[in-house]
Image (tube, rainbow, N blue to C red):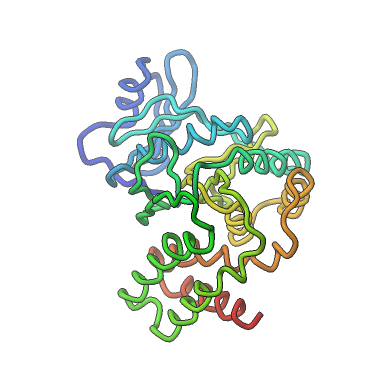
Length: 295
């Protein structure tokens, strides 16, 4: 999901890249209104993105740096950032293959194992008022709290309430989701420590590089439950997903019954999508809630 829109201050991607990297620009190719490939005078290609929402760039830059600090899965280096612009290394595109998928599974396990101070913890230097796509997302740390209570309060219910207010979710449907939230202590599986999550791990944010490595972009990083990242990979599809999951489980075994909890973890991204994109995603979220209630 993309938080970036058109430029409004007269600055252009090439000018922003030059200002933030200190290098002259020799080429620029716009991909969208707020995304461009820029070539610097040393031959380096970078991606330049525009963020208009308050703290969107700050949140993404902090997330990329936090993921990088884990020394696990590859992440494009941040070359520069300010209030509106983010400059990162360009990832040359490759093709998904089994070897890269196996490596990615192990690296994702290592990223999660790097941990977080608490559920809801923001990356160092990142704002509490962050984003997942264009939707606001609060990174409110809950030291000592268990995951079920935090997940319900800060990841499911805020988007459910907004969807109800906007008429995307009907009150009777919302009641079923609320019942799932009340039952989360029973549905969540064994307690786990806070993991270092990418937070928006859909297929579009998983880049299969030409060098055979997977790189992750556009994080909504925070401390959370590692199964949430895995559930999002399954929700929106990922090449060689079963290979990724098997390699992950081999490196950091998942708790028994995790596959049966996927729907609970998918409530969060589905409700975000319901808020952003409408009724179809709301129906999916309600169906998953009712399946969880049915056991």
